[in-house]
Length: 177
Image (cartoon, rainbow, N blue to C red; front, side, top):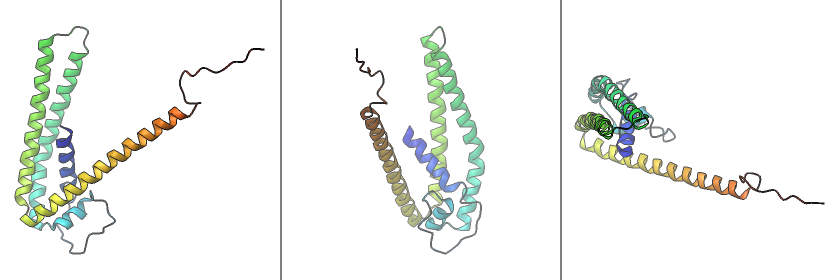
């Protein structure tokens, strides 16, 4: 599920703000800008004014639908949490709430998939190749960040274990005279 969410977030980042302006700039993109810079992505893909307008229209339709779907999902998860942590547990109610969460997630996946297909259909074959390359780079960068965080956590936990002042419940030696 996390992979879908990350992909949808990435897709939203790509198309949300980049299409505020329909002007095309033929200058080479600044290689120092981060990949998630929407204008840079639009430039790299070399989207036409027509494509930009189509994406804007798709976003206008999708935005309220997505907001509603996310709200339903949040409510379904909240309801499930309430049932799980209630004083009395009724397995049939828990199952009903689980099904509501699943249903809300399925609706969100369907909505996002329809949007992605619509976006994919406006890209030319060359743009689609470039988009796939960008996605691969972003995925690699994300994996590198995750690995770096994991290494930092491991390093920090190793440092805490080695530092005697940070060791919990360590007995201090007391000398008796």
